[in-house]
Length: 148
Image (cartoon, rainbow, N blue to C red; front, side, top):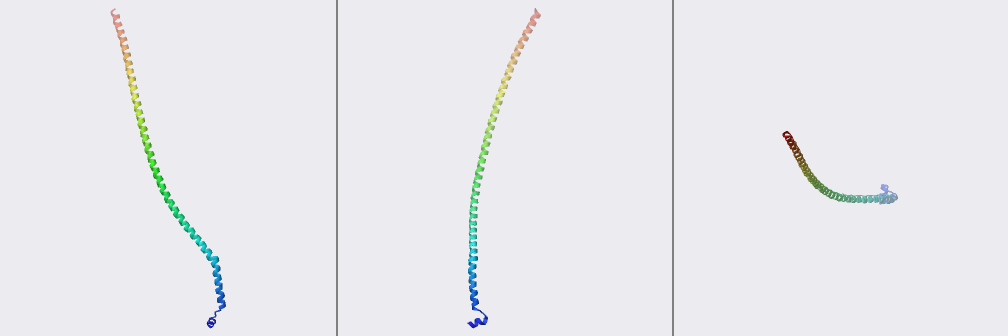
């Protein structure tokens, strides 16, 4: 076998040193390069997993917030409808009260106008009766003065 090794020009000492060098290089690279890279990769993997977990939680939180927002909007819409209804009812009631007061004032004004009209008619009648009486007296005096 040694002849075969010498025939091909293989130096066993050189191969042994190369194997030792390769082992040392493998150990050094493993310790200084492979393990730190694996550590960085594992940390990055954990960060990605945490990021995915956080994103899922954020998605759930967003969905819950959207549901809550929808509930709040529905409540606000219902309350706004109630407020509008109450405002309309209040406005209708106020309008009815104003109409009733206006009608009452109109009736009062008509009654006062009728009362003043009657008073004017009565005063005019009294004045006319007094004037007729005076005219009758004057006419009687004139007739009596003509006969006398």
